[in-house]
Image (tube, rainbow over all chains, first blue to last red; front, top):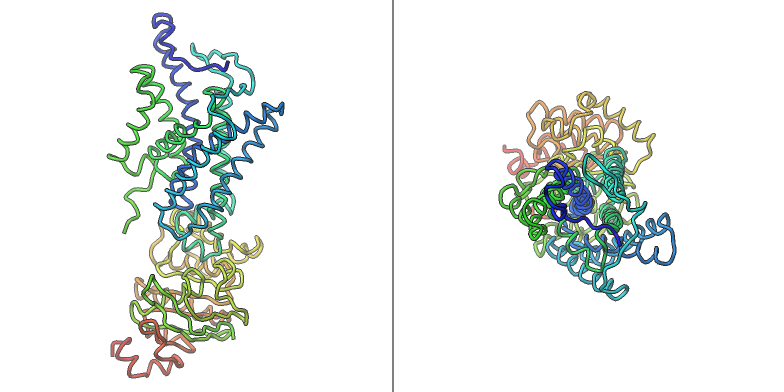
Amino acid sequence: MPKQYSAPGSQGKGERDMSAQFMQYLLTGLTVGAIYALVALGFSIIFNASHVINFAQGEFVMIGGMVTMSLAGTGLPYLLAIPLAVVAAALVGLALEKFAVEPARGASVVTLIIITIGASIFLRGLAMLVWDKKLHALKPFTGDTPIAVAGATILPQSLWVLGVTLVIVLALTWFFSRTLFGKAILATSHNRLAAELVGINVRMVLFFSFGLSAALGAIAGILIAPITLTSYDVGVMLGLKGFAAAILGGLGSGIGAVIGGLALGVAEIMSAGYLSSAYKDAIAFVIMLAVLFFMPSGLFGKRGGERI
Amino acid sequence: MMLEVEGLGSHYGRIPALKGIDLHVGAGELVALVGANGAGKTTLLRALSGVQPVSAGRVRFEGADITTAVPDKRVRLGIVQVPEGRQVFGPLSVEDNLRLGAYLRSEAEAAQGLERVYAMFPVLKQKRREPAGALSGGQQQMLAMGRGLMALPKLLLLDEPSMGLAPKLVEEIFACVRALKADSTTIFLVDQNARAALAVADRAYVLETGRVVLAGSGAELLEDEQVKEAYLGL
């Protein structure tokens, strides 16, 4: 059985001192938060390219975990199974753009968002047929012996989650600030007309954005599957949490997605630990609603809307 | 003939914006398009760049039909537009804006273009690391023109390059237009400053509610009674 994080409270509060408990919640929160951050980055990348909120983002997370599980089940080593699963999810993302979003070019953003909701229901249903409705476990990448850190423990898989997320954030930063194509994507998100006039193929930018977002989602799904199990509908909750993280950080902001994801993860685990784990899932939505009411552009979003 | 437009029509929804435009621009010419607000000047330039759908007519560039060509293909062919209202990429640096202007050109062409633009607008070189959004209006216009030149235009479409600028800057922008013409760049210029536009143009067209109503040399139109009354405020 894969290790599940349990609230340390079950071990009797007297045995652990407060700071160790805090540390445990923090590490767990950051792990979960890193996953939310990856999903949120996917939302932001597609939002930047098209102003569409892609509600099929969670399904990419599911596809990543489920395909890896299937491939690993055939005896394929992770070194092959994981890249193949990421590629599979990216292809689904590209197909979604090509066959569902691109044909509706020129339609309103709301229409496109509804298309992505439809796509997410379709993908989830398809996953239920291809696989089943059971929960599936994925073996941790490198064992499951907990490592002691400052009185708390961390699973090796959590280190993978944090490490891979860090590498991805650095790689994306490099891509968007150092490569011409990355800058072209930023330019398109800032001013689509001007981007077309300098010869940037904005349809290609959108196509690529769906592939990249799908790959990021899949990586999140693969990283977290050994900790929380995976199933055909795992994308619903992870997708919504990632969306909440993107809203908290400010939709469209890369740094906002990362900070928003980590903050949401920590807030969720802290409140589950110190308040009640019954409300764990509600926290994300309370935060999202609070942000939408009082700070609609989020922590790092553009101030004051573009409506003219 | 570099650019030939025949019977070009375009609509916003069901409202016609262009109603059968015929015009042409020869290689090396500077042709101006004048007209009131809402006459369809910007719509025409956008249709020429492929970012505004066309409902009738044809556009030929250097003999080839490009009526349905996508925007990036037109840039590759050498039709480059400097849009109305500068439209710089605000959060990106001045140099990134220029580099993106040469998006479809080689590294070597981009490096050469950068030198040329910096020589033409030294202030852009000083501010090359600053975000484009932090520049003044005049500097943003220079940046927008520089970005257009980076694409190595054969035909440069200039939309309202002097709009909203102080008189001294207007003069500077028109000096730059004359320099480009002397450099044998073909230019199609739209400007509400009809007097300045007609004065620098070889030929000009007058656009009214989506139709070409007058055509002639820049000097002729400057003397035309109708034009004087409607656009020069005389």
